[in-house]
Image 1: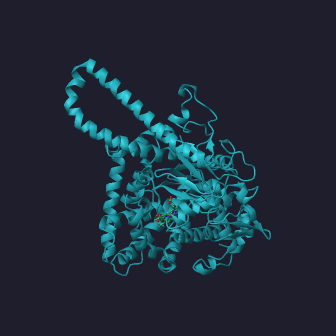
Image 2: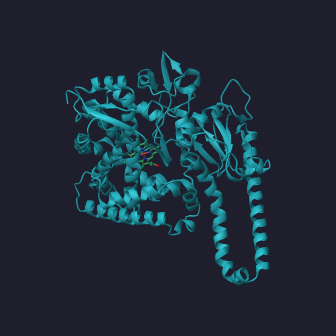
Image 3: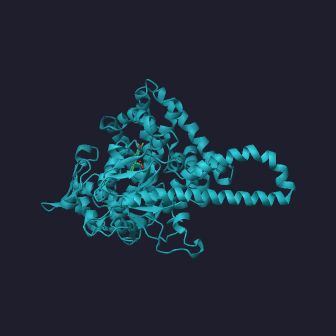
Length: 578
Ligand code: HEM
């Protein structure tokens, strides 16, 4: 099963399972010692206990299903359409919707790519129950997960404005997301915290990512790029290079040097102890059924010392020790320029405690390296697949000084390549929220929509980026030139559908294109990431002709927390003038 569908399972399962688990764990601790004797010695009693447990479980499932059905009914009553079950399983005796919802509905390819495409008809009112209007598309639908618990998929700009901007603190990160992402970023890093704790962190960390702090990091990025190119030069130009991995070597070195003044030495095969530890931790994050169960039961199953858990904790210990060491060294260098030097300066009043500083450092590493690496690998692959676009870009870059970021940031073709790559292949392909309170949000087609506390929300970023009603009939094609006639329209919860084309220019709103998300929980590292992408794509295209044997559309992804390419094989050959 691919990560994307599994992510759909994660949040609701854990939310419901957590409550049960906590009660069951407490009951076990209390009663098992008392009844151990009976359990082992008296088979008849064992049978009775098993039957009772089965009955209690069945009752619990029934209660759960009834509660969830009630929530779903309230949504249906307000006009929310529901995904139909196209392939009912006979062995679920017609109860599929109430037991496992849409979890076993077939998805031909579990990669994020295909799932996103499949969501578009649903968002347009096809393959759903309860939508017969032809004048408007719902842009919202409901599907069901375990025990029929509803999950609301939302692509409506008005509702998204409420969820991500106007009431972003009411729409919280769900527990399962926190559990999964926290493995990479720590559980008190900015991605995984909610409410006032988040506000406090964001206030301290914000200044780290303004241009004044970022500009001094430019020379380090450029020298890391030069080192990477020297590395590329060691391969014959007929060799296909795994950019899906190599771009990560570059971005890991850069976040180490600029983020924490640390040398990962990621281009060397052996790396450093912390590179190895980091890789060991990452390898374990595979959405296998067992991994999912550990996320659901972090305090019991998650603590069983299986080989993979031991590997994770081994890596984790090494990494946390190294991060503590980085913070100690940064404290001793009051004029240092890395992100954590600035973090320590901003944290003068100790608004963040030591553990929170460790988690934020871990967050810079986790959130700041793989995402940029995936975008870079995809941009390089796509440029290799589209030689005309590449040649045009090379012309634009011919006379540019990479150290002149002011000029670099205004190059239209370079920016179009980045925008278009992040449109079709946003590393954060979807995100989840949970209604933290009963709340009514506006929607375009349904009017005000009342959402109950605890409702699961899925925001299908990539599906919205591929929607033909927003982007036109060639929405699925990678075409950087489209950005020549796009206006990015700022401002709140507008419905642009009636005025999509104005004076021949396509109007794109903040909730039509948001690879970094928007609002108070939008990506804090956006400028940093865009700076890296501009510099690295420009630097590579100026130096090399990029080529690939991979046909257009042949890319594959691994989707676990983020969506990253797995087959960006590219050949590089020095350009004549370089
Ligand atoms: C191409 C590169 C990147 C992409 C596509 C990206 C995308 C995103 C997205 C979609 C979110 C919202 C996650 C959610 O709420 O579900 C996010 C949040 C975040 N990103 Fe990035 N990101 C990138 C690079 C970076 C970099 C370089 C850093 C730091 C060095 C960074 C740090 C963060 C942090 C700390 C948050 C949490 C913000 C908050 O909740 O207040 N990101 N990013």
